[in-house]
Image: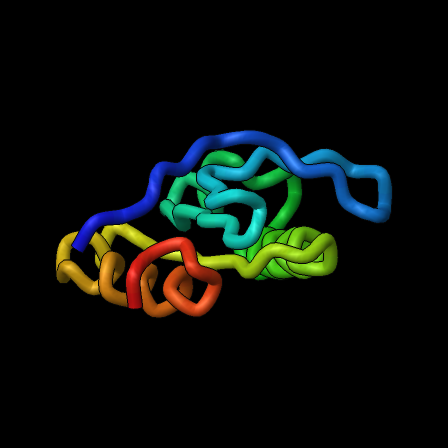
Amino acid sequence: MAVPRSCTGSIRVASGSTYVIDIDWEWLVVGEFDGMIKYGRLRRPGESIADAVIREKLREDEIRDTGPRVVRWTWNDLERDAFIPRLHRRLAPLGLVAA
């Protein structure tokens, strides 16, 4: 299965924040990689892992509110070859890949 060309970028949300996103496909789908660093050493001082997860969920909601769908994956998804079929299921209804 082929994956359509993508790029990285940033997106400005209604709150005025600008977020860097991992991958986007024509601003219809945003892809975010969930690695452990995000919930480990990139946590804010005094922030628990639960706080970091909630902050990330709120960030995702803000991104989704601007229009694109959000697809997430982890190393486990990539190692099991689960990501590409799931991505195709998300991109096909939008005409970004053949159904």
